[in-house]
Image (tube, rainbow, N blue to C red; front, side, top):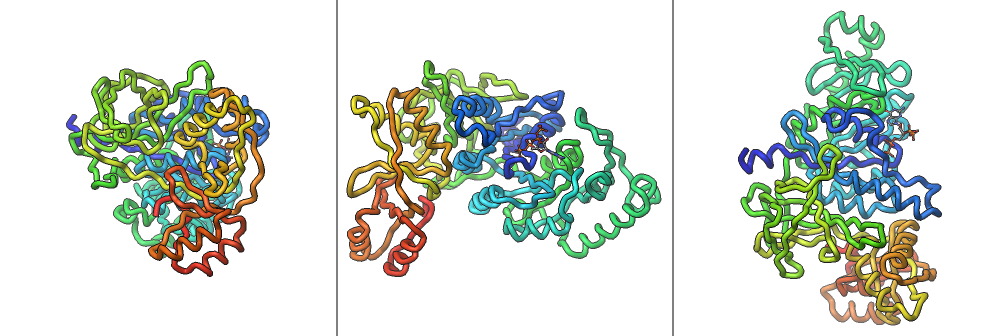
Length: 524
Ligand code: G4P
């Protein structure tokens, strides 16, 4: 196969959802179709249950599972599919944001009874920023849920994207009979079955056979619904989907394997193969001969005896090869990798080569940080995902004066891994850690102790948001920094950050200093 063909058959995507909508179940069913697993129940949820917050070892175990399922590769109808797993727990939302930098498209799972939920909205914002094509799977149709038309409106409104149903449910809850596949113009009826892929029967929509299968009432309703859909929604336009403006919608029940096959078949046909990726220097095309890639995720080995990590590289162009020297741009040094790994059909194996779109795991002992670029020599810097303002802040203090060095080193490395964000107060030099959830503080404390032998303690600080500030008016910027000296900090790159302690203070600052731009993400 040529390089172009190899890359063209790749589909690298993530499934995102609010916890409990059915992401794990859908992933598992996709793997079943792909023959990567043979029985349901083989994929463990990496969900961190609420009760685990106080039990760090339990979290660790659960996080361990997520290493194994970080990337799931399998073959389906000649396509190479890579599903990137995202953490279910919202305290690790930053991990999910970063994973979204490495995918070419996304499937969003929505619970038909709950509709669009908070986590989904936030993740969709990231997809919108990056113009990632998204498909929507409305799940749990075997339960009583919201009206399908209402759900479509909700998705449009709440997620800010146009929708186009490509399958349509026939009733719901106990009366759910299957889905009409609009994309292929076929009716698919299913028998609920949790253990294996159900049989499908195709029927012509206009024939009386339809009435025989689903009953006269549901048959009429289906014909009416479809007519309404054709009237209200424009025909599906793949270009709009690829541009990230239009989301095709599928209905089904992942648990019962209803509608999953339609989703997958349509997905492989229309979802994009690896797309061009913007580097600071230029646009990089996936089919370029030369290899390039970037690190989007670092997974620490929680075993204190082996302080090694796996750095996950998304191959952006060309072909990655084992034991070939590549240039680590930030360190400007040549590195080669003797045991790069990939996950195929649930098995972790050493790979000799990987193509644009693939994800490779590189064993690492602290050489990498999130966003690092590897190339065959060219000076390239891929744009990472900006950091978002954290939502929780705490001072981090040394609890063991003999171990200051270890603490500093530990904090630096954990920040490189992207565990949380560090701010240093410009006035006092005190270190502030910002996170999106309480769990991250526990993770940091535990890891500092077990991996670096350092003890930290947390002290409260009441902050509302971190904003990166800039201005063309030097004098005004200087005045602002002087007035707000107590609240000024540097981020890891030494940029100015204003730590506002309330929404009110922030608004006042924005009012009083009209020439200063306040940004809530680190890339502007
Ligand atoms: P998540 O990864 O998005 O958090 O969701 P997950 O797949 O773990 O699913 C959450 C719960 O919803 C699970 O139940 C799962 O069985 C159920 N579920 C998923 N798809 C469907 C569906 O199509 N219909 C119905 N009725 N339920 C569905 P649980 O009780 O939390 O877990 P389990 O004990 O069943 O594993």
